[in-house]
Amino acid sequence: MRTLPHVPPKRRGPLASFGPAIIVASVVLGPGSILTSSKVGCAFGYELIWVVALSGLLMVAMTALSARIGVMLDGTPGDEIAHRAGRPFAVFVGVVLFLVVACFQFGNNLAIVAAVEPYAGDGKSWRVILLTLLNGAIVAVLVGFRRLYRPVEATMKVLIVVMAVGFLGNVLVA
Image 1 (tube, one colour):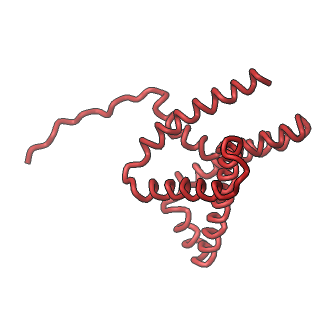
Image 2 (cartoon, rainbow, N blue to C red; image 1 turned 120 degrees about the vertical axis):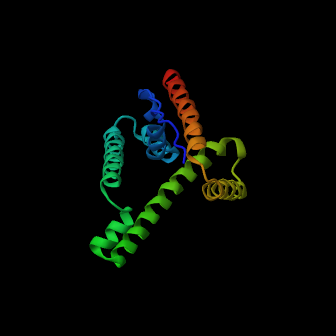
Image 3 (cartoon, rainbow, N blue to C red; image 1 turned 30 degrees about the vertical axis):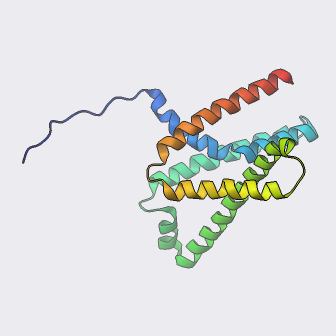
């Protein structure tokens, strides 16, 4: 049997880990967070900036803790909870986490509706159609693609740049 010569792995620069960081940042700082922070700023000015800063700090801490837990555990978090605390408690934690994620997505849906509303009018039927199509497309992409990470990473990089340009434009106008 013939063996192939050993090829050392390609050295990657410091920006190679920037992609995964963008994905995590996009999850933590989504449209729902931006909409909520913007509405708080518009309604209360700097009076409640401490709430926005504290929530940002808590999101960073939660993300860092989740990464550490994911790296240190032998199995998935659900498997570890079931092994250590029993299957019923693992099911309870799974249901709670599902509801938290559903609420997070609901906030993202509200932000999408708020962004499109000035152009689409006050009718309610377009909201249901838009959110059904958008969430259906998200589910189809997640279920249908085997190698999803690279396209999502590239898309998130573009969206983060667009968001940063939008923030900079708002700062200049303000």
